[in-house]
Length: 468
Image (cartoon, rainbow, N blue to C red; front, side, top):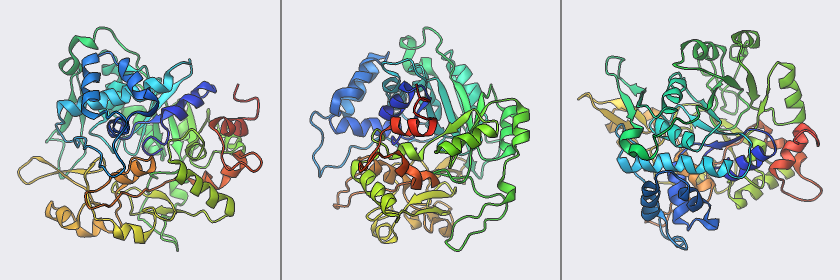
């Protein structure tokens, strides 16, 4: 769920209720750095840092980013290095530690299971992120938005602190170029972390096609432990329809029979699976179980509960729209720099509105969704369709690919109260996503109370006794 919407407080509550609590692994280096700059209210991340096995690394992160009492309201956040093909030692260390902290806090004080969710599309941080989560004893790794064929083998190697590498998707490159990102735990952390093996978490691939399930089960570099079958009703990024893109009268992608999964073929693989995307109701759970699923993955109902990381003012505004029947979700085929369709929740004063989008000066300063491409000299370059058009074109991109592209990275930070403040006075605007389940969240509220907890969601979907 975005960046830190499903943060450690939400995942912890779900895990304590006896279910798999999943933290978002997106941009955790940035989340930790900005949270420390706000003064770390409650001291939670400092407590997690105190438990990181390499104390010197934790102290470097604190020295770099922690501000007692937090920055003032007009001050911009200190920049975090942007990921590249060959990231700095500082960024690798921050990323490992940030993922450790998020999982540590989610698992603290109970025996429930915790997972972490990554996007294969955001490749550059992933091998470092995985290692940090594994150091905190993460139970599951979930990954979608691509073909994460190499991840199972990387998990195997990292469990013994072995060196790992992962192939990169570089536009214009061939397999001969062999562009890889590499990580050596021993070289970066020495003997402080690598003395004994760590648990290899289970790996669940998030898929939207039968072909993808078959490919991953047969051609992955290690064991795949199951699938999350995500349908187009899910929030965030959706798989594009198969074949030529067709749009409905609202300009949304149209899904048809070719996009239906063959459940019988998936069952023949012999691995467990869960459904996602519109299953956040008791009826959705029953339908999933009837189709042979182990259960469901739920995002949208939890995204607006008390424990989610979404800013309280945004949460309240969305809930009001749901209650008065004016909520609108648009599957935007262009908004995301990734090229995947993206579910956009319409809300005033956010980037969902064209007037707000037009007011924003295009900038790409976080870079998580940048595309890698091969330059004429054979080196790797970086470009994003949401950066200034002239910059993108100068790097060899097509101007038509920039039309309608929005900066998800800065929008997702604004969603959780970490909006960057520009020197010219502009403050980055939120960009909220939700799935088709959003209209159903009224069923989790009791009486006249316009809010609900994670436990309310679980009790409603499972039945009052089903979460014990």
